Length: 312
Image 1: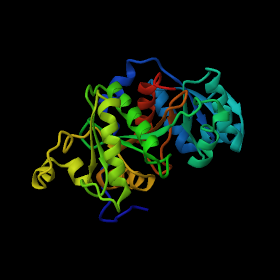
Image 2: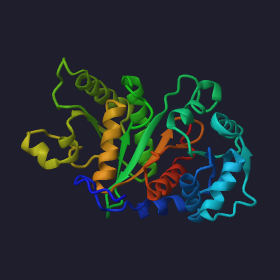
Image 3: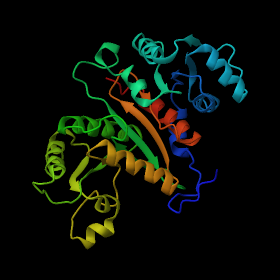
Image 4: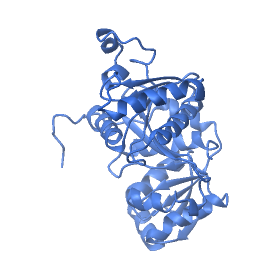
């Protein structure tokens, strides 16, 4: 059924060419698709392979994987096929990554919570003790290759200051890998003033002050309302002097609700391409919503390829 809600964009997202070009100069990673027995994620990995962005390793119920491959007309003869049905698939992928047999892990036909619960507990061996992981969206508008890195939209529900600091550090590192020498980051809050009754404002100020010494390679400002982060004209109108306003490379949000809402509004309402990745573990973990497009999945594979080597 065609959606005609007036706030939905008719634009079909496209994977930014600059992201593909940067990834193609790198070694092709071995990508484990967790719960691979679904046509949509399997097709996404197939397209990534065809573009030289992945060497597939298929994990899940082998009968379902074969059926899904037949459904999309993909001959998977010769590809690694590992039988680990249901909840066993993600721990198996973690084992392969821990042993150096895969370079990335991709979400397949599985709920995000089940997927991450099999990968991120310390017992899975993919992250060092006390290491904080973060989910980062790489978002590009139609007809533009310039990304906005948004964190966190899918992993940390109500992150404390230390978790947001870790997310910001990872986003800055990723931005530099994408060619942004001095990333500019805005820390989202409802207002640019520190208001005692709005904890996010004071926390944003703490993170911004920390970043001045912890992340000297970046320009970090906060608290900032969304209009200030996105619009230099809004900053001028409000008398807010800023090096970030209207020029942000990174948007650090206070919680998962705001991050998830912003990314989905940009995707559904603006036709943006949104790649999703979890960083901070031994290998990049590709994490997109089940409703996202093929372009989003291809962009996620390219982004993961660029992020290989950033792992803890």
